[in-house]
Length: 101
Image (cartoon, rainbow, N blue to C red; front, top):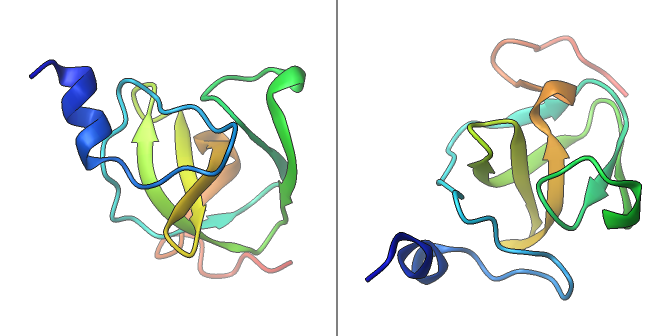
């Protein structure tokens, strides 16, 4: 099996329109949003790829995976990937315990 098909076999279900990143790896870290950010369909900064969802400062994320060498996180709702957020705008909960909305 190729690495892309292996990634697809282990990937969580994705919401319609959300792309599966080729280099998605599982993540067990819990993150909190430090800066409000749009959610993207693909692991890239592109206004045309915004899903219409936004995560707000202080929100705890369901993190389903990391991609682009950790630069983006696939976030989920009830186990389904709803899109990607930049890793630079979130922080591990255990390091940023004081972040509030």
